[in-house]
Structure formats: C-alpha cells, structure tokens
Length: 69
Image 1: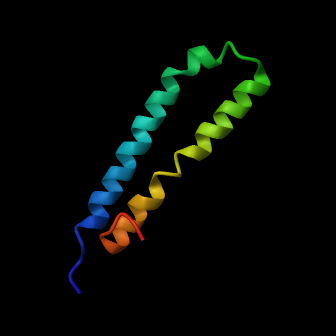
Image 2: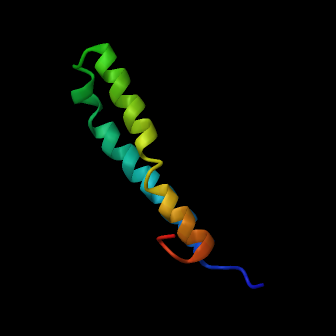
C-alpha cells in the first residue's frame, strides 16, 4: 500500500483550524473578561469542546477519502 497524501494534508488542516479557532477565541477574551465568572467558565468550556465537532468529518476524510459515511 502506498501512503496517502490525505493524512499529512488533514493534519495540516487540523493544525490550521485549531490555530484559527484559538485566535478567534483569544480575540474575544477582552469582551468575555467583563462577564460574570460563571458565564466565563461556561463560555470557555463550550468553546473548548465545540472545536472538536468539525474534526470528525476531517478525520473520516483522512481515513476513507469521503466526507460523509
């Protein structure tokens, strides 16, 4: 079996998307810092988990070459 180009390309896309997500959230830090502590905690917990959602199709594409099942 020859190695697939999808895995390195997918890894680069994952790194790029995580970087972009982190920059977007960091840009909101000043606004969020004015919120009550509980709201900040919930916000950061939510955005800390939600970035995983787009990774599932990307990982599927890396393995199979298809975006959908």
